[in-house]
Length: 180
Image 1 (tube, rainbow, N blue to C red):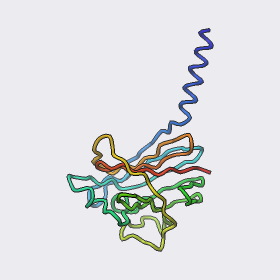
Image 2: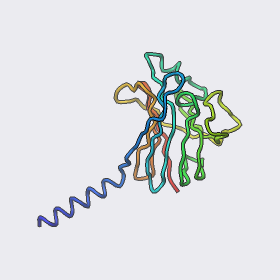
Image 3: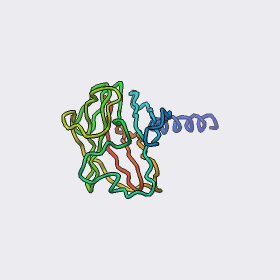
Image 4: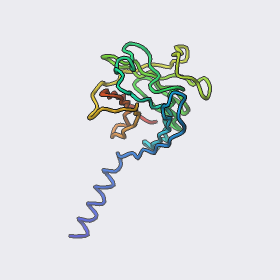
């Protein structure tokens, strides 16, 4: 009986761990405005995914000023925010072949995730380059559990794929995606 319970516990742990994704984050540099730049990495459904971005501080500034409603936002600081995957990713109707792409968002009551082509390494995050846009998909707007001082981008593994999460101040926005 003890062996059976032990086997069941191990099986439940392994099954429960199938949806846990370890995030590895490495600080790359400090931007000219003082924002730390990082690369975070995940393995989701066999895909190696990384996001490189600048993490500006809120420093008491109004969220609406920092994340301008109705306007494309580079979703970070300095250079463009970049998502890279070695497998195909699908955000809503947007299918991204393996490679590197820019991430922008449009804040507001109904946020949008904006994915674009990367024109060159080190591509600057502003001004927004409409001609590089691949497509847009809705994001779900929520609130953080506690205020977030630095922009934080993460990926949550889910049974149906994963969720891209962007948090800053009291704002938390998410967009589901699948691999394959």
